[in-house]
Each structure stands twice: as structure tokens, then as C-alpha cells.
Image (cartoon, rainbow, N blue to C red; front, side, top):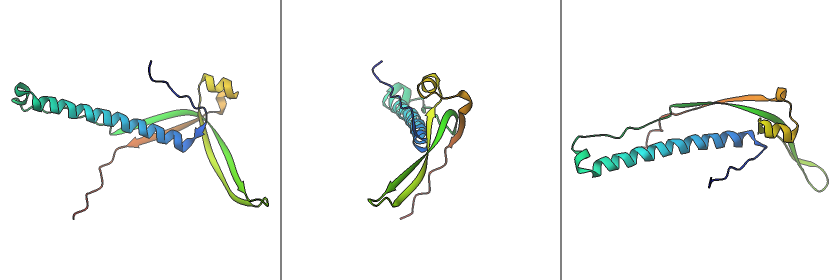
Length: 130
């Protein structure tokens, strides 16, 4: 397999969800490009174009996902040279819960969380008249 899968154990939860959203967008784009290519083929074929054929368009109106994750809170604190706290914030970190992560980090299966998300398509905003 030419493509390598990068395995990252712990990432901010927002980054994990953003990557899922990017994957959905890439899948939709691939389906759109396939439909465009099919329509171009039809339009450029003298026989097929006689029949008024139209390419089929596919659309994912909604994607529902359920991720089994191990979640942890991490506090990040920045101080100045005198030790005074300048910035302190909490981050929610997530790790996929699978056998490899469970063994590597010594996680208990009872410590998992289920993160549920829905990605729903909406119509584009109206174009400004100008």
C-alpha cells in the first residue's frame, strides 16, 4: 500500500473533529468531481448526448458518527520570568480507544467516553446582489 497511515495517539478533541469534517468534505468533493466527469463524458459523446442524459449527483445530507475516545483535560500555563501566571487554559485531549492505545497508555476500557457528532449540510448563503 503506497499510502501510509499516520497514527497519532493523543490530539486536541477539536482537531480530531475537524479532521473528520475534512474527510467528509473530501468524500463529497470526490463524488462531485465524479459527477462532473460523467456529465462531461456524456456531453462530449455524440451518441450519448443525443439522449439528453444527465449525470447522477450524490449528496451526503447528514453524517452521524460515534467515536469511542479516551478523554483527558490538560492545563497549559504560561508564566513570565518572575513566575507570575500570564495565561492559563484547559484543553480537552482525545485518544482513539483501540487495543494499541489501550496497551500503550495503560487505559481501562471503562474510562472511555463516547463522542457523538452530526455533520449536516446546509444551503449556501445567498449571494450578495451587486
